Length: 181
Ligand code: IMP
Ligand code: MG
Image 1 (cartoon, helix red, strand yellow):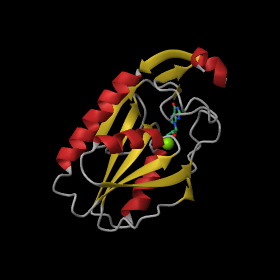
Image 2 (cartoon, helix red, strand yellow):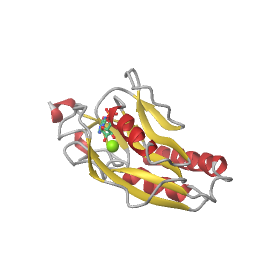
Image 3 (spheres, helix red, strand yellow):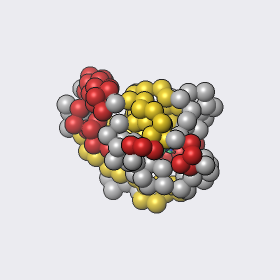
Image 4 (cartoon, helix red, strand yellow):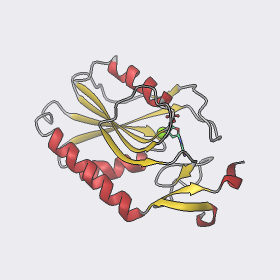
């Protein structure tokens, strides 16, 4: 696995400390909102690891729920096609929803998701994305919490995959282009 990585972008320690910072911000920002309930929504499968760590960095009661959507095949390019494979279990009406995303690339996935969740009338709807790719046209999306800006390359690790591999790398790195070409 490690041999397929060209460059490490964020070490395990850097990820842990940034996730803790985001968790602390959420704890502050939502202190008064906790009564209505906070629902963390993770987009499977990439964001599951981020959300698991983020949830433990938030010192308020949170519910965790999961959605599965597909926008990428096994390739490295966004298809723009978004399909719900698994919907939420909880009713989010009147709740404070925070979507935990792994990476914001074109923004197509998130745009679809936000529209879909907003139509269910949550008390509030925000996004926490671990990574945001630079230099990309991102379909007018406001992310309240962004972990790191990252280069416009194909990256893997800490939940992010290429063809379902590398999700279990404890750090985030750039995949060698010869692997996906
Ligand atoms: P978007 O719709 O183009 O913003 O793509 C978002 C989704 O594509 C993310 O949630 C990831 O699952 C996946 N994705 C985008 N860029 C990468 C990458 O560099 N590595 C791995 N997955 C990626
Ligand atoms: Mg994703």
